[in-house]
Image (cartoon, rainbow, N blue to C red; front, side, top):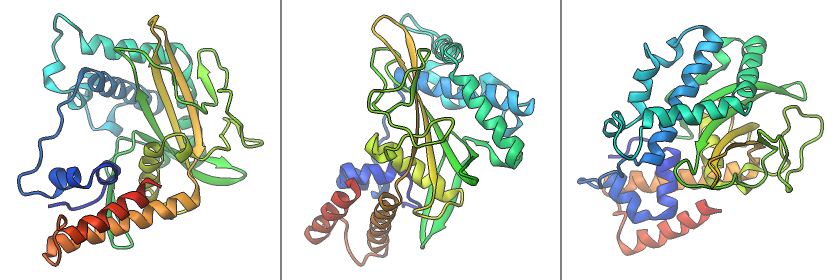
Length: 304
């Protein structure tokens, strides 16, 4: 039975309450979708960039709890992709994505930001792929941020949550709107407007207006790292995309998570957890007519 809420379980509920029940509540739970090649290359890239950062920042892989790059790569990539086949080699493709990311200058930027956090706040201010668990207002949450560190904004320490998104590796797409720069060109999106006096730049557009699901993830991670609900959380994303011509680009995003949006999302998550507990206790059934009506209301509130 469900022991905590995560950004993915909350998102599942928002999109389809019955799917949420099948995945997280049913005795015979639905089978999770298998990792696909696009998902695998993203996970492989993720392993390589974290190994590089851990080595450059600390001189070892100890922060990641592994002995080698290959070990972390295999931890994150499904075993069916460990060996090359006639269509692709995921090990090679992971390095192709990572080397393109380094070549465009995005890796150096992240390394600089994390090194500054270590200098100003100590080595404990940074982290990779750590499993975070905690209880807020009686609701247990779990999250696994890609990376996090701290920075100063107007002389105030701010929690930064970072995520890498590898999109369109085997197809093509453009970065989402509102990036403050796309590398290697270095130009901002036409809709980007920055808050005054911040370097690296931060958009004046709240994160949920760029991608709701990004804000959901970063909010939970920020709370689990000690930021109060409605507090200052800076969401940072690097979106690695590939054009039809095979050219890699990285869209760089930095957005605060709106305090009012956080409060509404947290309230809706609390309502969801309350329903889960009532189902577990047997006082109500999640899928009788009355509960379905309530669930549709809560899911609608969470979609904001």
